[in-house]
Structures are given as structure tokens and as C-alpha cells.
Length: 504
Image (cartoon, rainbow, N blue to C red; front, side, top):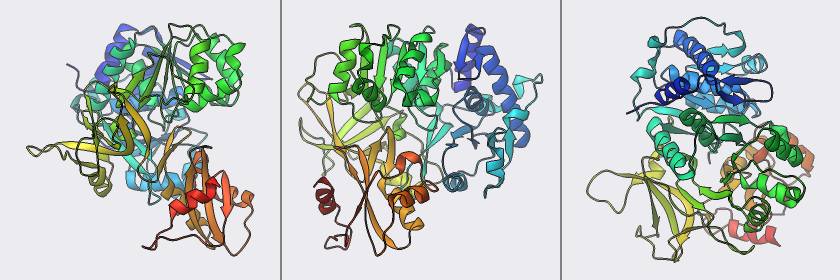
């Protein structure tokens, strides 16, 4: 029985040393080469700090080097944290302050940006690592067990500080074995990766490669802005498996590209991260081979990517809602009402999850952890944690879970989970003269800033300033200036009134 992720990787390298493992726009690595590069990185980490279960920050774009750095970190017995090289440096500094990594792995292109920042950690420049022979028996991964952390992915935080979700080796085993069995994944899979490495959807792509010997193509990011090139890439590289956010599939459907572009290699189309409109899904189903598997997956980062799934097995009208399905194997879903009792069919309640998929919690943040990883209210006999997702759902008469929306101010936008409070926090930090409320217009898929100010602020000024402190996908796309923000009786901003306002 394998107890850590490197044991799976070692097994795959032994089976397929000459097989292509991972490909980006500039390089490609066979499994034996990926192992060599990863162990060299592990050696550099261990020279700096011979600890285990400590975070290593990976400040690299989505490349074969980043993939090797993840595996190298695991070889060293530590857990990796992908950082977004496109983020403003102040956000990176905020993450690193809480993370307190033993080192940061970067390359020649980004090392100067780190050196000029307020970052005081050891840096490994992957471009300067020299090839040497290593004794693999010295690596600390042999000391790791399945409940140790494997990676930390950061989600938006309501106070302006991103939360680091720590995921264990065991949770990844649980998720990947389910996916392999459910979708019949083998070494013959050719995976077209879309999700950035800072987004937990990428976990499925990376670890299907590690566990099965599948080949992972890191599709060049610019192709997603040019869907024709994206489909050409799929066709020329014989991609047969994709796990994308719905917005990418929607773009292809809106342009009717499958009318003229044939992608016969595609056999499995999975999507998650936001609601998939049935109208656009029907376009894909109509244009691809009838044997292609389509599946809608759902889950927050805190439960290791996904906890429910629905394999599309019947026809839906364009205006019908697609189910998020049934629980993944070894995950249990509780739909609880406001009295912490199980909901009846069609009664709306909060989706809560229990099982091995649950995260260890938020790194260095017990307060936030204890707020959402709580004792199962249905179990008074022994300690058992559930994760309260904050998502409202109901169960239909077929036993399928139907997603309704968010309980709080957290949204899913372009596949990313975002706390509207973090955007508000940043706006109020940058602009001293305004009062602001950030809302989400679900009908138009827009982040909306409603504000009052004594001075006129051009939209270009908002975007320029916010680009310095927020990720691009978090910057509002609509700006509404009003005379005064309405307040509730408790003195809080009346978001209900403001939502009516922006809808009008």
C-alpha cells in the first residue's frame, strides 16, 4: 500500500520511463527526465533546509519546470505552494508572510522581481541547477505519511489576506483513484490542461499523469483567447481528455467553431468551477461523437477539487439546470437546513461534506479553519469534521443535487472562487475618498463596484490602480457611482437594495 505521492510517481516512472510525461510550448519531458529534474530540485531544497512538511513556494509560470518543482518538493518531504507570477507583488508578499516557506523556487525571468520586493526567503533559481548524480535514499519523502500536507493552494480571503488551503496526500489518493475508476483513465490518456496551477482544477490533470502515465499537455495560455487555435492544438496533439472551466467551452459554442473545426480525438469532456449553461453544453454534445463522455463536476478547494459529479446521461432543454450530481466515492454530502437537520427533497439547504477529501484546514489560520471545518451536527458520538461550503443546493426526485447559489458573498467567476470582501478591502485601501460595495451580477457574469465619492474617478484610473493590488480576474468590470450607499438598520451596507439597483 502506498502512503505518499512520490511512491505513485516512482511506480509510473518504473513502468514508462521513455513515455512522454509533460509538454509545454517550449519543452517536453519523458518520465525519466521529469524524475531527474525533480530529484535535482529536491536536492537543492534539502541543502537549504532538511525539514519535512514545510511549504515551498513555486514562483514560476505554468511550465514543465513548475511541474518538476511540485514533484521535487514532494521528493524533499515538503508541500508545494504555486504562486501566480501575474499577481501584483503586494499580494505575493501577503501570501508569503502567512505561508512562511522554507524557500521560493523561481527562474531567471522572475528572480529580480522577488529580489526587489519585501520578500526575505531563500531563493532557488531553477535555471542555475546543475545536473549531478544523486543518492535518492537521502530524500525525505520516505518519512511522509498519507495525512501529511502535499500542497497549499490559496483562495480569496474576506479580510484581504488570501487563505492557504492545505491538502493531504490521502485526500489526493482518494480523489485521483475515484477519477481513474469513474472515467476509465489509463496511460493512453492525452490530457489538455487548461487550469492554471494556482487553481485546484489542475490537480486532476497533474496527478492523472503521475498516477497512470498519461501525457499532460500544458496548453499555451494565449490559445484560450483564440479558440480556433485552441481547437487546432487539440486536433494536432490528439488530445482526448479535457477538464476545463465552462467559460472556455462557452466561447467555442458562441462562435460555432465546432461547425467547421473537427476534434475527433476528444473522448472525455469534464468541466467544473462555475455553472455550465445547458444551451452551450447541448451545442458540444450535438457536434461531438455520441460516444464522448460529458461530466459536470462540483467542489470547493477545501474538499480536494470535487465532491460531486454528474455524467450527462439524458437530454436537457436549453433552459434546464444541469445537476451537479451525486457524491464522489468516499465523500458524503449532507444538505442541512438552518436548524442543522437534513433537508427533504426539494428543500434548499447548505451543502456540507464529510470524508477523506476534506482539507487539513487553512495554513496558519486556525480561526478561519474552525469557522468552516466544524463538528458534524448529526453526530454526537465522536469527533467528526464536516466542511460547510456556503453553497445552497437541493436534491431532486432523482436523488441528484441541484446547485442554487452562494450563501454569503463568495462567488465563482471565470472558474475562480473570489471573496467580494477582498476586492472591497483592496479598493478601500487604494482609494481613500470613496465608500464602496462590490456585488456580482450573475445574469451578466460581471463583478460590479458600487461607490459614492465626492470626486470623479475615471474607470481607467480604477483599473490602473486595482491592477496593482488585485489579480486581473478580480477587477470589477462595471462601475456604478451613487450619491449614498444605503444601510440596513444594523448600519451595514444594504446589499439587497444595491442588487436591485444594479439589476435595474
